Image (tube, rainbow, N blue to C red; front, side, top):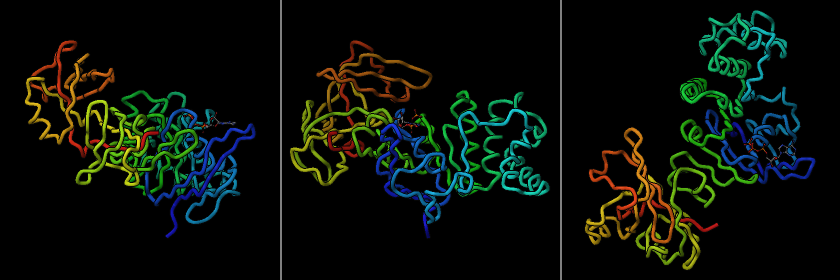
Length: 369
Ligand SMILES: Nc1ncnc2c1ncn2[C@@H]1O[C@H](COP(=O)(O)OP(=O)(O)OP(=O)(O)O)[C@@H](O)[C@H]1O
C-alpha cells in the first residue's frame, strides 16, 4: 500500500535565492495526524504550501497515495487547506461559505446542500447556517473554516496555524474537537503550529524543523524523552543540557565525564566513540531534589551515580505546582518542576543547598552539535 503522503528529497529555493526547505523526506500513513514545529522561518509553511500546491517544488517529489503531484494545480490536488485567518467570504452566509468549494467543482445544488448539512451537523453549525460570519464567535468561525475544508472530502487536510487567533480556553476546546473529528473521519491531518505543546498533544508524530531541515521525526513522547539532536533537546520540553565526553559504557548505559563528575544516561547514538563530545539531556521532570542532610552514598546507589549538588535560587508555587531554579557550582541553571506534595520539606530560595538526582534511563546522551 502506498503512503497517503510522501515527500522525497523535497527542496525549495525561492526566486531571491533563499533555501527554505532542504532534502525533506517524510512518509505519512493514512489517518495519521502529523505536525510541523520549529522556530520562525524554519520552513514549516513553505513545506505545507508545496504540499497544497500554492508554492512550486524546486526539486524532489511530493506523492499522494503513490502519485506524483508536483505538477498538479492546487485545485486538482486531493487536499484542503485551512489558514489561521480562516479566509471566509464576508458577503456569504455560513452555508454559502461551506458550499463554495463544492460549487467550484460544479456539484448541483441539491448535492451541495446535502453534503453541507452533513458536515454542519457534525460540527454543530446548523443553527447558524443562514447567518453571515461577522457576528459569530472565534470558535464558530474556526468550525466554519474546518467545515469548508472538510466538505470537499479531501484525502489530506492541511492546517496552517488554524488555532493561532483563538484565546487559550477556546484553543484547548477546539484542540479536543479537532482530534476527535480527525479520529472519526480517518483523514490525514498535516498541522503547522508555533505552539509545541499543541503539536505534542494532538499529533501521532511531530516533525521538528530547523533552518529548512528536518531535525527529528518522532511520536510526541519519544520526542520529549529521547531527543536526537541538541537542537531538539533545547527546543522541546524543559531540559538541562550538560556537556561532557563519552567515557564508555556500563551495561547498556553511557558513562560520561562532566564538570559534575561521571554521570550516566541512555545512549541514543550507538556509533559514538569514546572521547566523543556529548550532551547529557536531563528532563526537568526526571530530577528529584533532596536536602543536603540526605545520605549521599545511598542516593548514589539509588540513582546509579547521578547525584550533583546545587543551590535553590528561586522557588515559585503556582497552585499545586512548585518550580525551582537551582544553580549548579559552575553557574548552570537547572529547572525542576513538581507537584507541591512531592517535597514534604520545602526548599527555601537563596539558602537551601540540595542534591539533585535522576535515574540514568531518564537522561539521554546525544552527540554535541
Ligand atoms: N515568498 C518568499 N520569498 C522569499 N523567501 C521566502 C518567501 N516565503 C518565505 N521565505 C523565506 O523562507 C524561509 C522559510 O519560511 P517559512 O514561512 O516557510 O517558515 P515558517 O517556519 O513557516 O515560519 P513562521 O513560523 O514564521 O511562519 C524563511 O527564511 C522565509 O524568510
